[in-house]
Length: 338
Image 1 (tube, rainbow, N blue to C red):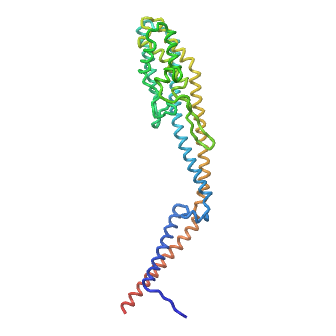
Image 2: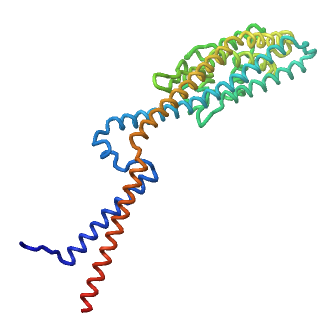
Image 3: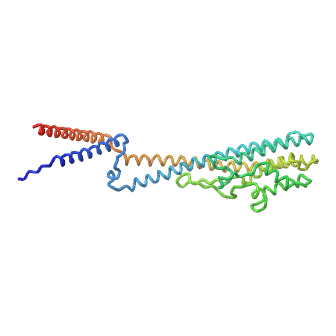
């Protein structure tokens, strides 16, 4: 019977290979024990990773939906904040103009008109506001401020109404300018820079999409601007020297604001419905993500007891290799000393 032996270099290579293999196994088991997940998922699943891949894909999609929901939630909150202030400001202004005592002098009337002009400027500034780098009232054109400055709009209206001699004519000219369709040479062509009639649609949940159409071109917003502009024109010299006509123009502006209340509340309600749908979508995606995460973790999880036993066994193997290596080294030294 033939006896086989291996040389020192071959033995050293074999011991090094065994040491590397056991060390790698030790690292894998240590990571599995600390993370609670198997290192080789393909081996765990026998190569059939279809189910876990589907779960991961759905989780990624749901995460994107949650991000969409967070972004559109911030957007609609900004819309609602501006619309709420616009409604409260215009309602208070309309009531004040229609019920407060008549200004006894043209100068005081002009002062009151200038105050309305300040409110108009504040409103335009709010409508030009942005959230997270996106302009709120520009429709789909979120990188462009929706409106010209209040001064520019009033200057256009002063030019438009110059020479008119009655409050009725001025009010009609202002109304026509704000109500003109695209291509009509009015507000939408000269003062508004967003999209017209476009809806912003975004998916916030599985089978749930939110649409938002409110912008500065919405009729409720335009009528609010229209009413304030009528009142502000008196301080710009429109109908100068005609106190009664100026007073009538401001009253017409107040009536426009009052009649617009229902339309403005409709915009508020529309945004509120979108907010509710967003909230429902966020709740649904969170619940679905939770269920899928649990399922994924169950598939990926490593049994801590089995992993601990395997780790101890591997540590024992490594200790044995070190002991054998040390023994062989000592034998070589003894043979050399002989």
